Structure formats: C-alpha cells, structure tokens
Length: 132
Image 1 (tube, rainbow, N blue to C red):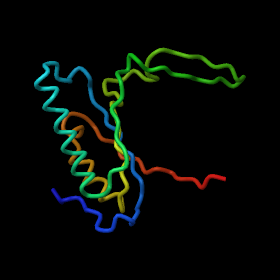
Image 2: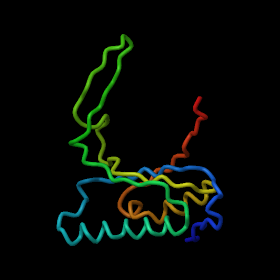
Image 3: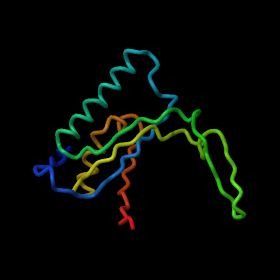
C-alpha cells in the first residue's frame, strides 16, 4: 500500500474531504480490553493525520438510539421520529475531516483508517461556498 502524502508546507491547502465511518454495531467488541485496544488504534490514526498536517477534525457519534430525524412535507409541516432515517445494518459512527491535495491521497488515508478494517469509509469532498 502506498504511503499517503505528508504536507510539507503547513500553509498549503488542498481539498477538504469528509471520511464517513460506517460499521455494523452487532460486530462491535463488548469487553473493555478489546474496546480500549480499538480506541487506541483510532488515537494512533489521529496522530498520523496530525503529524502529516492534514487533520482538521474528528468525532465519534453516539448510538442510533439517540438519533432524531426531522422531515418537512410539502405543506411545511414537519414530523419528528426517534432513530435514524434508514433501516440498515451499517450505521454512521463517526467522521474525519481532512485537508488533502487530491482524491488519490484521500483514498490512501482512508485505507489506513481503522474503520476500513471492519466497515466502510466513505470519502466525500466538501463543497465550500463563499459566504455573503
């Protein structure tokens, strides 16, 4: 596997990418030692991104049992539903926001993400707007 690029100039900017981390919660570890070992792999990945100068943000999400979904109908009325909007085995569990030069580099970093070992990492470029 090719090593992802490291940013030499901290002022250099590229494209912001969001890595969406999906996994099947039925495969999550349950014993504290295994949970901590998995968390440690994410801390190590964070450090790699930080050392490369491409890390912007990362957060884990609480479980889907805490989700609330809002839908607005054509008449403007809204409905609020407990839980996620879709029934699926894989759920969105967290994200990384990174600043990378191109998609190939983003693919290299996503392939190293611990979430890719047990689930899916979706790469989405950020659409940036000039605010008025």
